[in-house]
Length: 185
Image 1 (cartoon, rainbow, N blue to C red):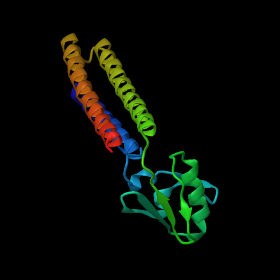
Image 2 (image 1 turned 180 degrees about the horizontal axis):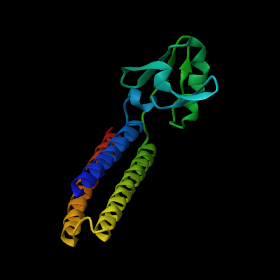
Image 3 (image 1 turned 180 degrees about the vertical axis):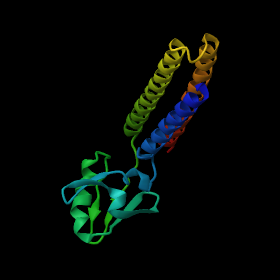
């Protein structure tokens, strides 16, 4: 019973780390990466659609992204979506594809990005703590119903705390790697 709860908790914590990692890929560093804009929401015939479902995104140069829409009529919607995403990017449309130059980050912009990363890392830590709290509540409920002993409860709490510490460390590593990428010139 405790083992099942801990496995479920570990799965939820792993998803939190994966979600943070995917979220941080969209944060700009000094070089072009299709991940920067692939999740940008574009209003495509009235419904918000991720850009990666509407176009092929490539990075032919370190400071340029090229967006080739599957449907040429969606060019202006894609351009508006990129501009509305507040990434500090100015796309250029040549009638067939969109070129998105990635400007060099200023020191001020880098520091702003690091703050954004820190905020997201902290949100992920809060999510981990919420998962831990839910699992602790379940463990206490098992104990109050007589399904597990007090010793089992204590062991379960210790294992849960160790697991939480391990995932918090992983989140901090993901965040510090991204901060280093941002501050790298």
